[in-house]
Length: 307
Image (cartoon, rainbow, N blue to C red):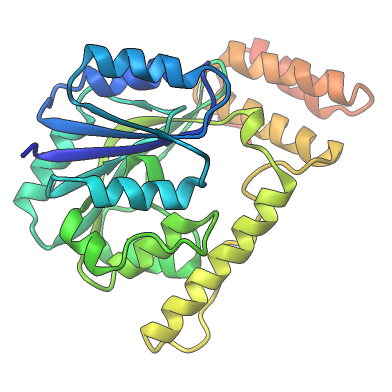
């Protein structure tokens, strides 16, 4: 029995898959099985996955028709043979020591049922935007989950298989925000924790942007929180997850996100990346000063952080 079962559902995204697969298969901790559900891909991903599975016996590949992310994750969870489950998404990149550090922590802290960590946001070209570092302790993480802010990054999560099954797995009525609902139920079984180390690069790209998906995301996050408030006897909680998590389809929203990415990159010391987002903002809205300001700042000597 391997120590860890990595579970991943794939639906298209052939361009981003190779760096993801390399990052998993080259982990410094190699005692794992890699359960990959090809959820009805149509862009050539299937052939690529079959080639990886042929070359590495740790990969357990299931190819079938499209059922959606949540049923796919539950299917992988049922197949998992290991006491620890690690999530992964097909467009993100794991740091080489991700599994090693998470397994070490979980073995040393049996009361912890769910573990996250710090992670970097990258764009579609793999350029650094910013680093997010959630709180490390159970109380803070539990409160943020109850507030609807989802502090544990889904493709970075490691959790105990027995606790996951006790919690009932993912709720398949959630097509999005299934992670927050699951984290809240796991938090009623044991403790949550995060490592301070950056363990993943989380990719932000245009194909992940959807106005409809955003509306569903916020609604499901609120539904998950309200259910947890009732289960825990907390009465009416304070939902803080209503802010848009992605750009919407309108030009104003997309401009705002472009500038946000640019200033994130600037404050991370990525001047060329910041400049490219400034130029993109100018192209989107040439009569507004915001893009010009970002480009100008990207050429200046280093100075205080901007927002």
